[in-house]
Image: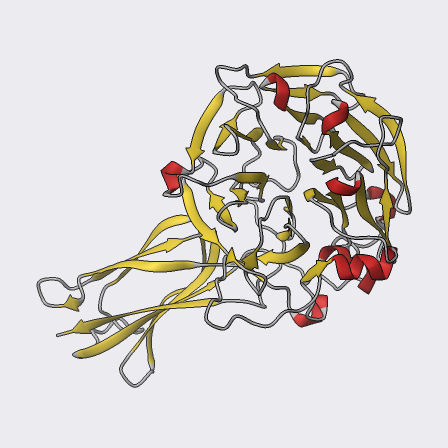
Length: 448
């Protein structure tokens, strides 16, 4: 198994935090989900949410978020110091400010900048929607009403126009994605298809038609050579059907799985954008239900995250999402703000059988459901809180159902005495949040 190397992601400068991370809000004590978690104070100084106020401070009084849509993040090779990995968490984040016909991006850890104006000339946009960015510095913008993809280059300081892609081929493209090889995937909305371009802008493949894809509006891609992909598979996630369904395709355009709002009990769900994490799970924003949905690598539903509101763990029509797979950093763009999280950990004990250990039934089976691969420890304590057995002192388990058996014996192999015992499961994330966050699950059993 390839493990994600744990390291403590450092804090960025205030200018970068304004685009990515944001103002601390009042804690919603009654609602504290842990599928995603806020970065620790030492990383972001308590900032995890930003809106138009911060853009005005950094870009001028005329700046504001106006119908924000796509968001992308990458580690630019141009700003990397290859002699050290201490700067590997310093991300460039780009967001589409569709109503202003521009993108907003950070220049290192120093400041924010914007690029673009309304128009159809080189480097101009008309209601742009999606955005993608690669470590090579190339940024791609789905310039919807100009029927093209605009290719830009970020040298670590400023953004410049390079070329237009798909002119004469695309109809109202709403989303794009780029893989680790530099291949570009476009949701060609008006033509009901996905179009793939090679790194120099030539069409390399396409799939879909009006019978299999209906107005695709979001796309995410990962390829088998991606260094930060646990499964090393080529996968393409597509939202279509007026935002009502998500499909997973292989690199040849063959559909592997499909999920709908109805299938997860939310028939009115509107999936705004999708993103892959390191393990191949798919995250989707839901603009109608104001939350984030997580699916596994086969599009089985895992869990929802968030609720409607403007406080902690709350969203107002979330649309764009970007995940830096290496460290589990998550950026979410909503109606009037952007939010920053780390992938955390969550799960529950689904079943303990039997609840009473007897001579005839001398062992207990614990079924736990994990929403995320986890490093975990399991211990058994008596009624006085003393640990009588460490079942699992340290182990990594997969997303989904996992089983653990306690045979009713103590640490030395002797049977424990009659009484009530607590089984305590401590879960830790496998990303950068490890060491900062954990979740404890407990269940009680009796021994006769």
